[in-house]
Amino acid sequence: MTIAATDRSRASYASHPSRSRGRFHGEADSAMRNAFQRDRDRIIHSAAFRRLKEKTQVFVAHEGDQYRTRLTHSLEVSQIARTMARALGADEDLAEALALAHDLGHPPFGHEGERVLAERMKAFGGFDHNAQTLRVITKLEVRYPEFEGLNLTWESLEGIVKHNGPLIGPGREVEDLAWAFTDYPHWRELELDTHAGLEAQIAAISDDIAYNNHDIDDGIRSGILEVEPLREIPLIGGIFDRVEKRWPAIDKTVKTHEVVRELIGIMVGDVLEETRRRLAVHKPDSEDALRRLPEPVVTFSEDMMETLAVLRRHLFAHMYTHYKVNRMMSQAGRVTRDLFDLYLSDPGVLPTDVQARIDGQAEETAARVICDHIAAMTDRFAMEEHRRLFTVQGYF
Picture 1 (cartoon, rainbow, N blue to C red):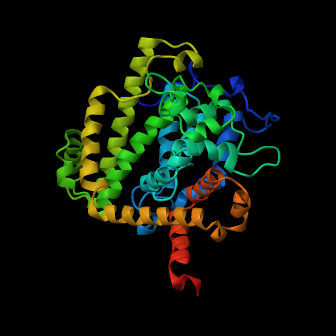
Picture 2 (picture 1 turned 90 degrees about the vertical axis):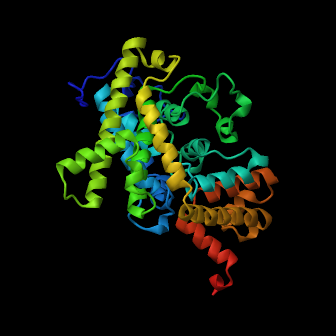
Picture 3 (picture 1 turned 45 degrees about the vertical axis):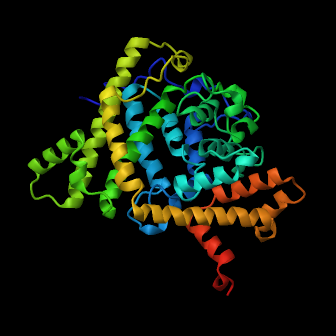
């Protein structure tokens, strides 16, 4: 199928910078960039975005420079998001901004780091990387004299918070929200009971497409994933067959790249076809009408979702729980746990500026400051900090 849009017209239900609901801290418009372009640029220039270069995707960052990190993953997500936004008549700049920002709240060591922080913060409001992303962009980034955070537009904030769907609804009450969501003064204005806009839905599905495919690539590259069992998954096996038929003597690495490239194209095409089908059924005529639909419009077809379920089970069984990955994650968990416990029991070992935010505060506030400090670390910095604090040689 043809993926590219036949023209560059914007859909009536897409976001538009001229119709933005604005920023919670008023600013003068830029003469050179629209509101969503400024959001994207602020995200790119943030310290949190730079730190993604050494944060785990699957393989801890120091395991090798050939594997994806959170930064390279985010760039791949943004490329897919822009392609789909263009094809669907959505705002490319907003879709790109949301794709680039979606992982800013991730701590070091991927989901293992998040698991440990959630465990340690259970008595202090919990920890959730999506909520932490909101905290990063509205409070923890310190770059501007007039306001805390990045002061992004309403559309960017809403899209970042709700890119995985409504946070309030049947079976999900306000009391269930992570602390960092409700700590944000304007959280009620983000309409947490509706779906996100078109661009946020695009960014979310682009994340799924990117990580499923680059995990295959990195898994094969590492030697943890074997090709033959992957071929048992019908869609993937068919792609391998086509690639090998066309290039019988192709190098294994190039073959993997070609298979992944084709698989990404198939997934993107599937999403576009299903999205257009749902748009034709629901016929939203505005941004708000799309947000208030009973289901998301940007998603995979049922057939593709079944295939992806098989793929994810395979990746879980043969990659995510492989003993080499388990060893990395076990070490990562110990590092995160040790740092949190030491900082909370002996805050005097923290940097002076972090100590200043703790002095005289209740334990709950101290724990949150420590959690923010650890969540901001890269894999490499966390491991070096652990070596300095827990290894005698580190002092000399």
